[in-house]
Length: 290
Image (cartoon, rainbow, N blue to C red):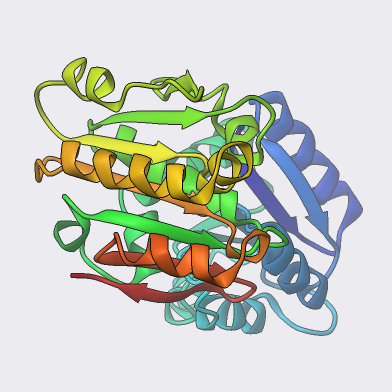
């Protein structure tokens, strides 16, 4: 899935020009016409970057930026402000509001594309860790049970994990059946290796094919495994897989929708993992590291 850009500007001509340029570069673009709408769309869609006009009726760009950066679910998203005001004092005000970049109107196609790409490149290696509120070193080698609410854009955090792996020059392998939300999100990403998830998948062969350097694995998902077999079979598979992944160079996420299962089955799987991420409507709801 291409990077998603949210443009917040009250001027139709500016919105249209920026949208046309960025879509021409392969980005997904969504539009908001004021600060309140921008905040709502950011919370709903979790864009990869926000282009934010400074001077708008109602909530100003500075106020909007402060709110975006104050929300745990959104604070990791780069914000590039743009304005006809190119004064140093305006740049300082946007920095104080938490903005990551500044673009002066009128912008050129190269100017807006360069500003967007620069901030995306800076954010990719660290976005996943910023949302968890930890340093990358605290995550490496952990095996996580990733519990998610299916009515949230949880796949965006999974994508951040995968894209961060690539940006940090680490191997990333995704085990997924066809048609899942995570697979649709990642299947066209370069350097993300996706393997069809079948009942007879051999975790040992996947690990042996990547014998050196950091290896990051996404198992998508335990819910499908439980529903297609039995909870006890899923339990044994996970237990054996974790034994094979004991090497500290391997970091893994095992995805689970707990609302789809009985509590006793979820509880049994939780007992296998010493580390756990819970993703809800407000983003990362809880994190356990052991």
